[in-house]
Length: 588
Ligand code: DGJ
Image (cartoon, rainbow, N blue to C red; front, side, top):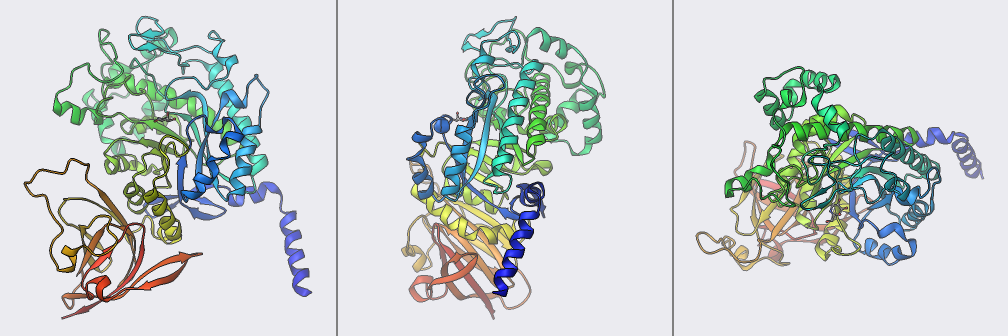
């Protein structure tokens, strides 16, 4: 009875806390932990094991019905769902909440979190998700122009709203502000919605910059003082590719865009769909996608997109301030020159420009489809940019590397409702990572956790973690010990022999040291040998080897392994999507 009274009092006290205060207390936000930046929801770090739906999936709630079970079967905890400006504001000033409310309700029913993608003025550079009332008023809402005032290039029409349209920016910002106010009203306490993507893959296509009269005037004018001051204040910490361009033009503190950052695209170069012009050698194909070409065009557009997006973000955060990010269509080997990818987006070489122009954007995120996953993670983690991967492929080893090594806030393959549904190995990896998430999050950003990727045929890799040096060898996706491992023989190496035609299989494992002689491993397809990293006896033995799972964050042993399962205590094999706890000891 006494207990009931107490509970009632506590409930009343909770009810008497104004919604404003409850919202602020647990609202999603970003928080530093060591070298990592984490997303916290309801005051606790949260790892988004996510997937993105195709762009139009949520335009019809009935059509979404068969998608929810797929999401659950894939062991996702977060779904990225597009919401278009067109559908939210079909008539100017009249807002439609049906889709947003419907998605939030179904997410709650399925115990999922949501990240909404605001398809406002731009999606993949172009403007096909702007409302009809915006599209048809090309005077109030101007489009970019290319070449000498055209809207059609050799490769097609350019229906792309210009950043030099204050009315467009203000209308987009007003709609996004209304969207975020509504999210706060319906979700300010429950926190189903954990982040927002603002616009989608912005940038100019089919030319390297906007050449409308307003854009040309701005391009001929001075680089704004806000940008120059930011560069001066951050001179020693600028992204190297960017700093080189500024230095090559004499580190000027003022001037026109071309005076400060060098030449833009020569007038006679036409932009094709893919980079064929200028023609590329094999070397250029390998290197050009990492460089800043026609720098003043790229920097000018990055600044103008950043300023525009900043206004939209500010309006959104005035409604409800949760973390917001922008995503980049990456420069890549076949799309290396500006205009073959959207020029001016948040690419790594212009992160400083985005930071200066859009300080309220929390994360600059890669849509990471190129086969240089680790390199791109590193390039997007420079200067404290928190890593979030909103679009990528379904590679399970990448998911493990992202959370274990690169401290990502979330990993999200694209198209999980349709074209590229979740494969079984990623679903199993998500199940494993969701169990390990509290432990991984507690160690992220410190030197007690990391991850390793092994590709078939590559030589052994060493990692120093805690008191031991761990040597990894690829074993593949097999369940039991490979015969070579049983007899202490190396896994097959291809040496000088022809490589297999199939792309090499990849294995990934996350590892955490939780005590002087204790490790947890998640995932695998590799074996690990231990050597001491501290003075003392030189041999290392396997003590307890346990296969198990985490239930509500607590370790439960499902199998104790010895004998045939660890080669009589000599070899530890990590199996895909499996969690092991291992203790070690030393002997002379
Ligand atoms: C990247 C875009 O951001 C997505 O919306 C989608 O169009 C994919 N490309 C398709 O691969």
